[in-house]
Image (cartoon, rainbow, N blue to C red):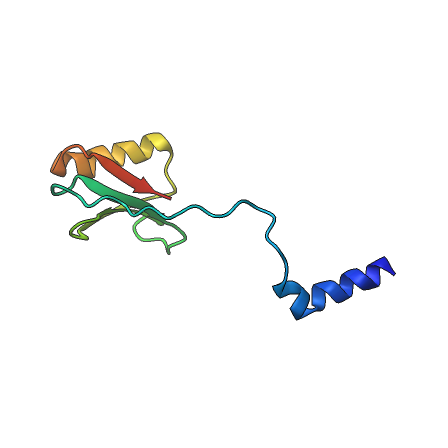
Length: 105
């Protein structure tokens, strides 16, 4: 009988809408700060699973959050932390200087 009750409750749309969440309430979202100078705040991301192009299958994307200017850095595979820092030094810091804020997922 317990199994039948469980099947009925999980399939019942009224029961599903009346469920009370068992977790703490979600916090407020805080927007990111507005950049105060060019190339002070960036966001970074990896784009993987691309077709092979001259031995590269991954792109390291660096986006300036204010102007939306982008640097696409091709890489042969998903890089380690050391490889990511080396790519940032040679492609971004060399051109734009050091940053005050980096956002990543």
